[in-house]
Amino acid sequence: MLDYSNVDDLVFTINSTRIVSYINAGCIAILFYDCFDCFEKEVNTIWKKKWTMTKFMYILTRYSAVLEGGIVMYQLSIPGDWYDDCSFAFKLNAWMFVFGLGVGEVIMTIRTWAVWQKNRFLMFALPIFYVVVWAAGFATTALFLQSLEFKPNPLTPYVGCYATYTDPIIFISWVLLLFYDAGAQLVIMLQLPSYRKIF
Image (cartoon, rainbow, N blue to C red; front, side, top):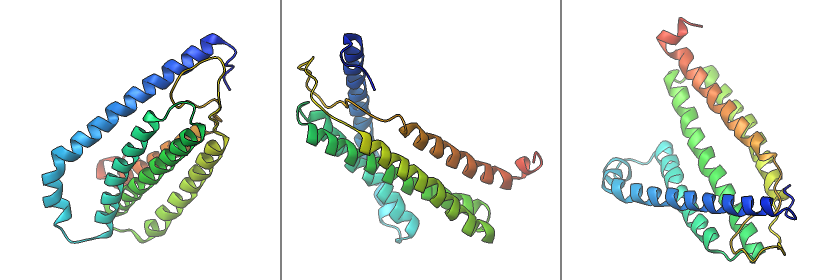
């Protein structure tokens, strides 16, 4: 937890919050540009094709990011003294991000299974691996969001959402994601002839 009685900590926090806001706004602009730029191709290659589970997950992943972008824009526009709104928007944004990422990882898991030509063992092993890792990731995210606080700071009239307390436990979620992706990539590599010789 930062000590806001220290002016340097306060200035650092405000500057960091502004930088994150600018990066978020830039990422949203790129996302919307990509959606408009690829719309015609997407209609022809995705929307006009037969509905499958993979198509459904792609659309869910693609457009949950657009919805998440809208939530981020709302969060960026909230006055800093609307603490409940800041908390709600941040938590909703975090869960939308985790949801979209989780669906994207399901697509990657299906791809891994396909590379192994729908191996019967992996048909059970990969979903178990997914559930174990992602359940821990969801639990960690829930603990992080439960610890999140948006409270008044008497030292500054600064307007904008910034957290006054967060639990560093969130890093575990990123470690779990790295572990899951590395495991899935290793399983894919083991199926490729050039890598099978190494192992």
